[in-house]
Image (cartoon, rainbow, N blue to C red):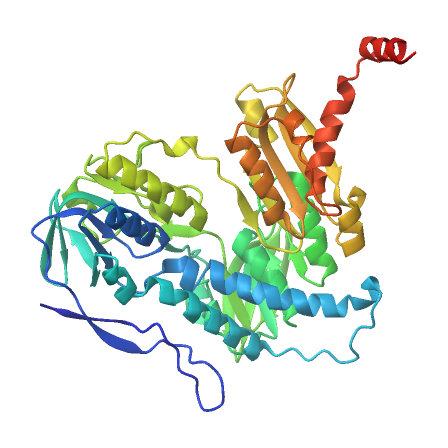
Length: 505
């Protein structure tokens, strides 16, 4: 038997009341390998853990291998930490905006960044207990810690032990993509992997990248008091989203005091004393920004190196990740892949859905397709931007005629009452039908509102039938009913109107 050092699920407090940044270690003894596993999983993030739980619940003999922290990016350095500090930053924004809501703003607002980060770490610890090695082991899963690599088409080596399998799953995730900017490495930078270790809010911050991570943390840290500059090479943030949605966000960030630099590229970074000087260029205009910290958020790169994919006969690309088919199979039919290592959309809820597909397809000869999933997503800025289904440009590219019904949030009674009028609900239907093919919601609670539309698409409920849904009054989700009412109104044609008038007469 071999022992491996893993992270403890508890974080002791320092004498000054702050939570330690690094997690202490305990000893975990890897189990003795079974003769053969039904499923061996490389990666203990959401995709790996969810697959392991589901497979073990069905009676499969499962091995789960993790080289770092169970729970993966989402729990430790992604969704949970970011949404926790975003919640605190919204509170500070609401306090500053109190007069707009008919209240007196506090004369002095003292931002306690260390307390916000301590709360985040407490929540992270609390949620991590559900994915501890002990709990997974009690569920019948053999948990191994160490660096795993394929030693053949049906074997994996971890901590000098050889694990034989019938089926395997690659769920090794992804890491931050770092741009090759001269001087960046020497000057030092933050990514989502270490930004949540901060105990002091940066006085001046440069954010490179206008994707979800860059926009969310730029706004949150600005609300904590940081002087933020955000640089984006593209002409708009969130390049995949609809232009009017991205435009609203761009205007909100600028209004909150963020220095927004679109169509701008970072040329080089220089260290001068305690400052970092960043040279920028936009068209022919060059400028230099002095900052204390640099946050890189331009995307993620799949973890495909050093795990023996060539030995296992698994084809991959260092940019796109492991090559899979619609059933999540790799080029080795006994090895599957899911999560950030292979999927285009890198969201935890997609890992949940795809994990269920892996269990059915790998262990029970299922033929479920990942392309059949209806996948919503949300960027948790303020306002949030959520989307599900197709965009108009995608529908046009596929030759699908589209009609769009838009309800601005300033027409929604509850949004007006809440003082949250920024945004809209936009629903796309196939022309000459009520079939919903996509939707975008921009609102403070867009992530909650989009769920109703996702349910309608999954259940094949058209926009006409949505008009029959009764929403409590007042709610912001009533914007969906308003859009469906807009669909039904034009159906009263002149002929029908004349017939109705004759009948009523």
